[in-house]
Length: 216
Image (cartoon, rainbow, N blue to C red; front, side, top):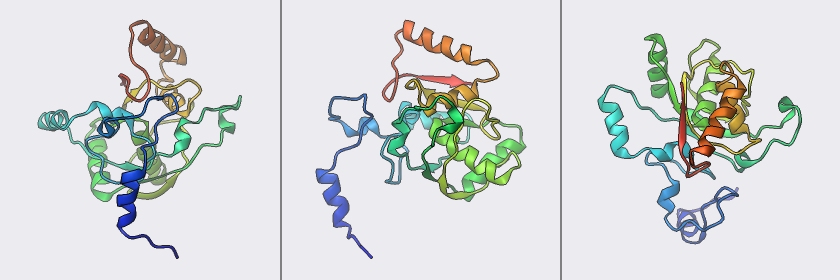
């Protein structure tokens, strides 16, 4: 058994570097730029970048108008940046990530479902947690969950819980873009391609520090 004291965390914070996506070449001087305001646990090697659009003030304003804001946990792995290299999507070996949704959050989300409210996921990481928890319950609701998920969402997937998605503009040939494609499959993949083409023409920013789109 290998045990570490609290000193290890101190050393890591002093000499370690924040892992950044491969497309960010410059060192990150202000580390808070790559951290959400609601982060709590250590464990991810990448930020859930859709959450970077939120400030504490914005979250308070959203709560003030009656929206219930809850959080889930997912430890993002480095493979989130890995491109899909196979021709058949279902042959791609999706990575697994540890996630958790607790009982209080479960009750809030299921309460929204029961009252015909909408569940809006902030980012693909949140979608992966919620849909994993719903696949366990098999009832259109979520169960509390603590463990690893290897859920791969791509066009053809039927969403059980998530009604809307706020997400950044993603890399081509990525599992994240495929999830967005699955979310927009009723409108057709061509619609997603048109949105991306328009975003490029309008000068929207892509990837981690970029702009976001709301899919309803």
